[in-house]
Amino acid sequence: MQDIIERYLDCWNETDPAARRKLVEQVWAPDASYTDPLAEVAGRDAIEATIAAVQGQFPGYVFTLAGPVDAHHRQARFSWNLAPAGEEPVVVGSDVALAGPDGQLTAVFGFLDQVPAV
Image 1 (cartoon, rainbow, N blue to C red):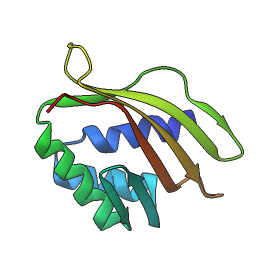
Image 2 (spheres, rainbow, N blue to C red):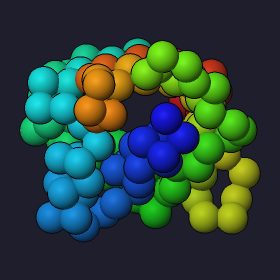
Image 3 (cartoon, rainbow, N blue to C red):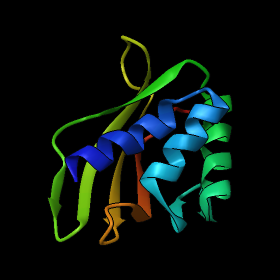
Image 4 (cartoon, rainbow, N blue to C red):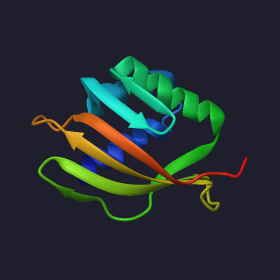
């Protein structure tokens, strides 16, 4: 699961639409879902659109793992940071990811632990 979670974050960090689409197709099952406090989407097209929207809201920011991936039985939980390169995180979150037998993600449930003050 470590590898798929690292590639999951690569999806969020890839700004080239064609390269991002290729990553999404490798990492996510066709009918996968993504749910967090701000979005609830299903399917690769909707997941990719959600990623593009986040990149538009936080241009130049990078997602990184905030610690080890804890995984068993095709499920993983992990924490992540979102920050401009080399700076302190602006957003901190935790996700739970489920993978199918083929290793592709079937569902991700995201939680926002720290968000910028409005």
